[in-house]
Length: 488
Image 1: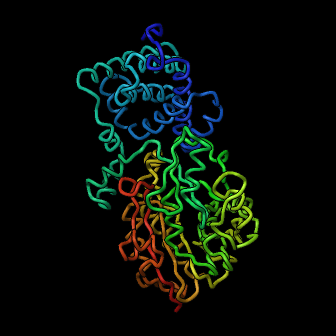
Image 2: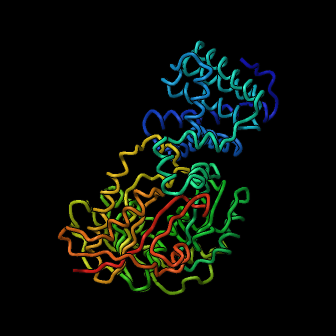
C-alpha cells in the first residue's frame, strides 16, 4: 500500500480528496445497488458534505460520471489483471476499485501513488484487509501498464463501454462517426441550464449572475434564446431571480417548448407535463389572453406542478421592463409582471383514453416517455438500464400517447411530438407511423408540417422535424416533429 507520508499538498491526496472519493463511492453504490439516478444521488451526498472544497466537489463529480461512462472498459482492464471477480459483489468495494482505475487511466492531475492509496484505503474500509490487498495488487498492475504504455483515450473507453445494442442503434440512427461523437460528448459533468422568462434581458441577467456567483461561469446558450448555461453555480435556488425571472431547465428542453410555437391568446395543452418546466415556459408565451393546461400520468408530479405554478398572472403588461430590487435584471419585476400559471391539470393515461381533458386546443405538446438515450451525458446510468427490446415497446407507447393527445386539438391545430432520444426507432420511425393512415376510430389525421416557430424552422432547415445533438448543439439529445391535426 502506498505510504500516506509520501503525500504532500493537493496533488498528493489529503482529507479533502478522501472525502470526495467517499462521496463518489456512496453515489456509485446507490446507482448500482438501488437504481438511483447519479445526478440526484450526487446532489444529495454533496448537500451532506457542505465543507468540501470546490475542487473536491469537482473531483467527486468527475469520478461519478467518469466511472459510469467508462465502466465496462475499466472492468475489462481489471479482469485482464485479476484472477477473481468477486470484488464486484460489494458496491462500495467496486466503486473504490473502479475509481482507482479511472484515476490511473484518465486523471493526469492525480499522482499514481495517491490514486492507488486512496482506492486501497476505501476498498479495505468497505471489505476488509484481504480486499484491500487485492485492490493494492491489481491497481499497481494498472499503474504499471499505464506508465509503460501511456494513458488510453477516454473517448475510446466511453464508446467501448456502451452496450453493443446501443452502439448499433446509434450507428443506424446517426452514422458511425456521429454515434461515437455522441457517446463521448462532453463536458463532464454537463452544464446546468437556466431558462429566462420571455421578455427578460439575457445580457443583463448574465451580468447579474456573474456578479452574484463570481466563481461560477455563465454563458449565453447556443440554441435557445432564453438559455443561460451555468457551470459551478451550485444550488440555483440561491441565485437572484430563481423562480421569478428564470428557472432551471436544460437548453434542449427549452428548444422543444419553443418549437411548439405557442402564441399570445392561444390555448395550449402540455400533454406529458411531468413537473411542469415546459408548462412554465409555455404559460408565459401565451400571454396575454392565452391559457396552458397540463396533463400527466402521475398525479404526484401534477401536485408538484400545481404547487409551483398555481398563481394566476397578475399582469401581462410590462414584459421586458426594467428590473427592480437592485439585482440588475428584473427578478422582482418578473414576479410582479407575470407569475407562471397553469390553468388546469389532468391526471390521464393517454393509452386508455383522454379522461377529462377537453377538446379544442390550438397547440398540443407531446414530450413522450422514451429511452432517455439523449440524456446519456447527464444520466450515464441509463445505458446500464435499457435494452434493445425496450425500443419497440416504447415506440408503441409513444404512438398511442400522441394519437390520443391529438384528439384534444382543434381541426387545424398543431401538435409537436418530442422525445429525449436520438434513436431512429423512437424518432423518425415513430413520426412516420403518426403520419400514416390509422385504422383506429379516434377521428384525427396527423399531417407533417413545417414548424412555424422561428427557432424550430432554423433547426429543421425549413422541414418538419429536427434532432438536437450534444456534440453539435451543446444540448442533450432530442428529436421533435411538427404535425397539423385534421379532424375526420
